[in-house]
Image 1 (cartoon, rainbow, N blue to C red):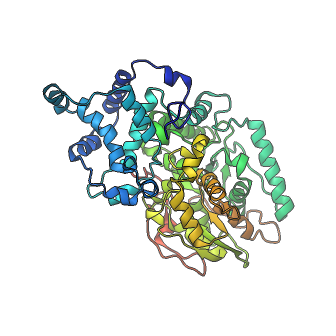
Image 2 (image 1 turned 90 degrees about the vertical axis):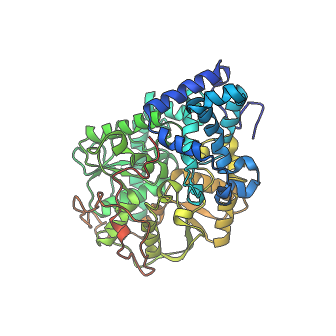
Image 3 (image 1 turned 180 degrees about the vertical axis):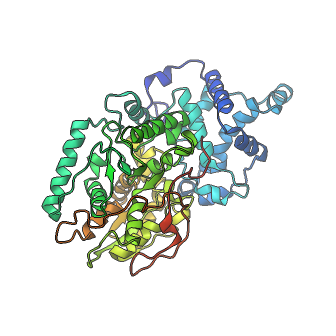
Length: 499
């Protein structure tokens, strides 16, 4: 992947001009270890020295390339080697006696390339006999690299606008443009479905404050119309904040420091409008980063509910009415890694799809063992590596989609949808449609003869955000079956591995 611009991805010029990078890298690494909670994991991993390679069998990139550099434990060893040499007591002593490894600019460049070949999907963790979390190591390595300026430009520019720009969102959408878009979507809902649905702004005291990936307002009109339709049909109390309407958090991909700032910004907006809960749209990493609210805010932070969890429970409670007609096209489902890898949201979308689709087809493997779309870990935003993403990195997912023969691929994640569309285009499956789950829900909601104005009348507290989601639960093919997963919520961290 190496190119004349030093890396396969663009970085800002300052990163290439920085002097004395090894010293700066080690200082940043030391500060992260001193103020963070990575020491125990790194110390354990470094003493294991696990290089058995069993993780290779679960890595979709290695399956495609067969290149030893793509074996997860080999990649993790790049950072662990630095840790042993400079941060374990035996490191300096061994170096004085035996000589050996010294951190160099070239070694930093090797890490910068290697750690953005990985999507941090964490599929390999399940096959490691010692339980090493190579996704965690990738995240930490990226964080240290970021502190010396090595960040894909696509990510850092978006984060700069979100934290310090005029619009405070990653797509730089000004509020008047956002409201114009919502007005247009309301008109579309009226013209197509003869129902009057508004997108409420700054309604104080609402139960739910809605945070989709802000890019949905530009690219996923049907998903947003589906979101609004579900909230309207169930009589939900919800609003969009005018100061912060972006659920995206790229800090999850490369910096806990950035992730914490964005989480605080989100929680501040909930407090400003006096909302009670965070309602996350169809975005995998926005959901997982919001699950870190208790980590960064504490136990008093607002509970988090994913929009699919809400829709599923409204169906369970009979508050979301469906038409008898089902979606006729063949449909398959892609599990976004950030909500499915630990089994947190796996059954709810399947139960909804089986209730509304006449021909649902499952990919194999799936759920916690799913293959990444190939654009995870922020790589989907790096357009200059598209050939790599839709080639070796996405090959296994392309094979899965092709094997189902499905006409529609559903994934409740903005990043996954972008990657899957490009994957299908670049792998001879242009006829396959990629969409969100709420896109399909919108087609089958029964708004009733009066337009469904609050027909469901959801009451506050209907969605039990405090109960833990489960990775199991039998789905009913004839409708939405009552399972333990129906009571899924999102308060609490997803896996406790970062931060």
